[in-house]
Image (cartoon, rainbow over all chains, first blue to last red; front, top):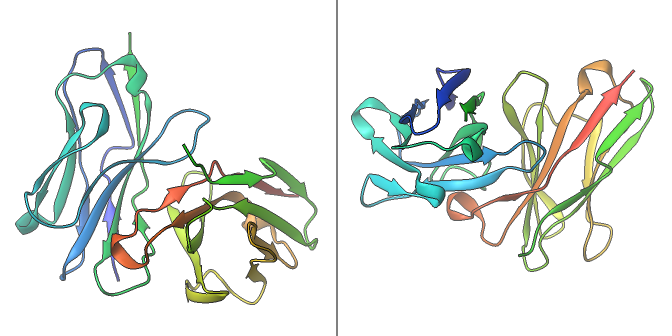
Length: 115
Length: 115
């Protein structure tokens, strides 16, 4: 069965610090990968996605993620965080061709950015 | 920008009661999903729906659960006889395309509390 692991439960950073949130998945076949963000009191929003091609994916608000197939990883990065990045971040995977599209989510990482 | 909406935002019910959670997907989307998140746990897939029938469902989606598209705009999740362990945040999502390449747009969620 597919699963997604996010190793950091809560990350606390100061503004301008660099961010890297880990995500690993278990599935041997082709996958599509997603990062969603949930700002306080808001709904899940797509930050970025990887389907194929360049493994370095750029998303909204300066976020990027790198797909490393050999490590089954899709880590999220941002060079310089802002207070407004305080949110919960969810990594998700979908097994390409194997389903109607249901997403398998990680447990989420809460990011707190101190001003 | 079109959004998925959900009502109510918070539902409190007694164990054994029936609840109906409502969602209005984005108007030109054809694929609909329900997910849930128990406090402190992962977002879990429940069911996907297309063309007035269930496309896929998880083990969680047992006989106590049902989904319906009663009219052209609403998409509902019914829990017939709620249990304490049904307490969770329930998210509706919709997508324009099916399968792994259909970006899913999420609603704000309904927090269900079963007493």
